[in-house]
Image (cartoon, rainbow, N blue to C red):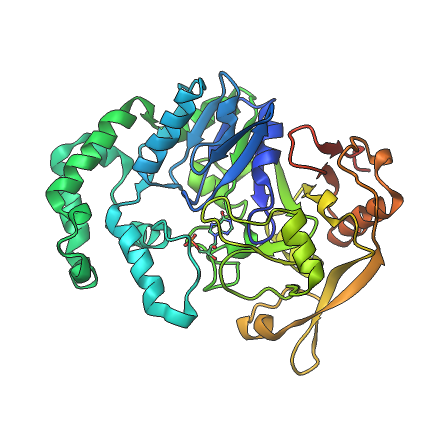
Length: 428
Ligand code: IMP
């Protein structure tokens, strides 16, 4: 299985980092293909905590090549901080490769993200305010600054000037802000270029070489299916495509290079930011999930909204990504709940029944989930390592997920530690 894509199946924060970390052990290369430092994940290794926003977590394995692909938007100051912090902790970062074609988040993107949200007022998306949307907008408008531009002072200055021109009106409140002074910005970004130069390369070629040699390459998705710009709960989405198909575009490989697609799914659901969330709970069960699951964002520190697992949405994600396997995370968080519920269909405002994820946002905003209720489990399962060590109710819960989606479950997370994983018996 040389090419494996790992994606989130919900609204992000499913624990993809941990699954990537586990699979990266046997891989040659880990490749990020979209998103930017709006992502964030925490890896606990030998009791030590590592937080990543841009660098693939495979960097913790000596000798692994970790790629930031062309589809990623890169804030170079964040990347350099991450490199420095890893280096200070004795981690060799020599394996990091940065696509020359990746687009750069500029200081004005961050300002425009914040200003755009303020303008929307009550209708705000709840972005991470990292400049992601404005950066992808410039990419599409062909006004983006790419990593390769950092290596040529004249080109860099010209491109920044061209990118600033149509934004003059919007940036007027920041006219005197030194962060967006053309000269200062050019100098600052040239320094970043100097610092990042040893890592910059043609990363598609690196992927081809590894794949052609039969080595395993993991394509690490950020955010998740329901935040996808095309297929998610638009406009309450991110500005990239976190679905598996985007791995090809964002890394520069072809569809037949992908052999497996793993979907990561929390045993319940969380969402940060605004937007529809049919199974959201505002009762003590939601509080149990938030509390036991430590549901606070790695990137922005915002509290995550919590709710029951939504199998309508998960079936949609399974098909959109053609999942070949599921990894269910944080099952331990559900222990102690008497009854567990999973949404199996929605009912619209007029009483219409939706077995499939509705394409119309108005329906999704008012949809009431219909639940199937199953017995919960009281036992602490954080010590389980095999399927048979899980209580029968937990096994039934997993079987229900697998049967409803038609996707075999390969891994189950039962705690934050790297070893707190149940490897499921091979699927039939
Ligand atoms: P943006 O990606 O910063 O533009 O934010 C758009 C939406 O995606 C907001 O609802 C964010 O909360 C959400 N979002 C972006 N990145 C993540 C993530 O890594 N985990 C969860 N939600 C995210």
